[in-house]
Image (cartoon, rainbow, N blue to C red; front, side, top):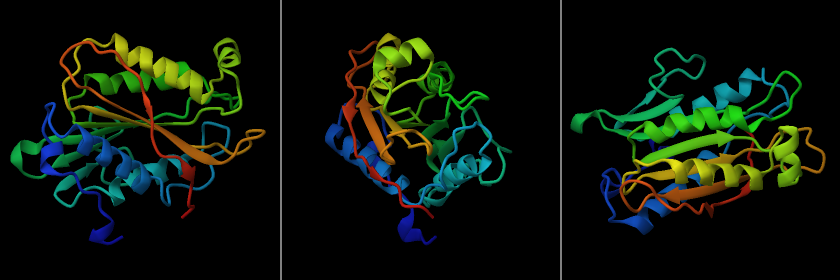
Length: 224
């Protein structure tokens, strides 16, 4: 993959603060579009599909900005992993972490997605200082929110509600932090449409915040 395919983060979006809010959202939207191209082979319902995880890790590596290190740097192993599943760290200027990411499918041994496993991984991101934070997960699109809450599965609506709660209850937001949530489709979900979905939220103030996630891009995955 050539340099032209690497992601770019403008300097004004590498710093915290209330400035350039619209640009930060634009960068987040561009990330979702770029990341979601050629992401992965089809994801099975079980939790043992290593090819999915390797492909997602590889995508973080492939589009890492040219002036940053991707950690881990090898798509086939977690060796070198630091704090979270993925980070982009600047090579210069104090080695700032520009992006921190987690991926969690939430499946148990029976192939059912459970939100608590996703939530555990997401809440690591709350404590990490980075201007962009990414969570990759898979909902069960066709379940109603109430059904998801009772049976352990979760819909995209249920996921959005829980993410709002986690973000809203956290008391140490920094202005300029942008959270990106990408919901990738599973195969084998009855009635599933195979489209990825996304949500975006940016902190405007210090401390606690009222949170309403905005819908980001959605579309078909282009398989590698």
